[in-house]
Length: 102
Image (cartoon, rainbow, N blue to C red):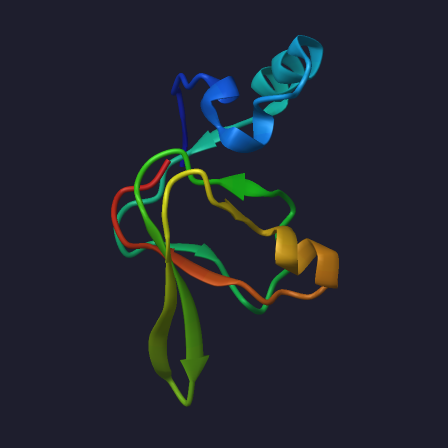
């Protein structure tokens, strides 16, 4: 779900050295999405069309084997997700919100 949200992008460690011009571009072209607790964020069977940054909340990186789902890692705020799937050109990140996530 797309929402209105304000964040200081320079407060995200990966963006601290980016030029003001590029920060403005990110603000203009970026989209804020909200996921409720338990909602899937990425599916391991699909390549995402965007890279996501967890601005608030926490997600889980999951593994599904024989219909059993296990948490591999908890993903805190400022974590990027979707990069591995894009670089591999194959869906490989199964993530879900473990709290409300923006």
